[in-house]
Amino acid sequence: MFDLQKIDKNWTLFLDRDGVINHDKDNDYIRNWEEFRFYDDNLAALATLSKHFTRVLIVTNQKGVGRGIMSVEDLTDIHDNMVTAIQKAGGHIDKIYYCPDLADDSPNRKPNAGMAFQAKQDFPEIDFSKSIIVGNRISDMGFGRNAGMHTVFVATTHPETPFPDPLIDLRFEHLADFAKAL
Image 1 (cartoon, one colour):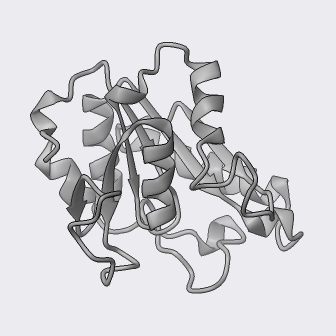
Image 2: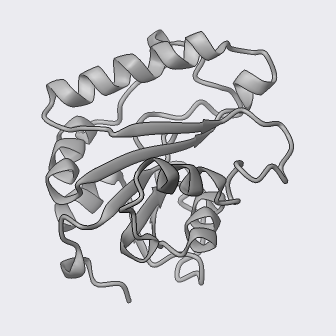
């Protein structure tokens, strides 16, 4: 069992976006800022998490860009507005990594760890053994394991996911519950 008491400011938090920070659209994409909706209590949760982690990073698969359903500009607009709202609430996001690739075997597409390695290039002080990924899919948990991170599953969109599971260290109902546990 992973002990949350071990966490100090030397730790890095990786967050998935859709289904963790904001409501996911069932079998569709968040295409613009108007469709983006934070989960209740998540702005406060992100402010709390920002106090515990020096680095807070988002890693998100975004096939909608690769498929041409939305543009990079649409995604950038969503992310700019999201980060502004998080900052206004007292939180911070250091960088957002996204993978528009369509091929499931892309090195940057979760569960592959390419976005973690991009983050390590940008922030060499990241120690994956002192990093956590919070996600709502088993692919997020695989991403964490593939990079050597601890994993936290939030059951927002997939409550049927069995636990315990070898890929999941801790499970919470929502991101806000994880923030409260810290």
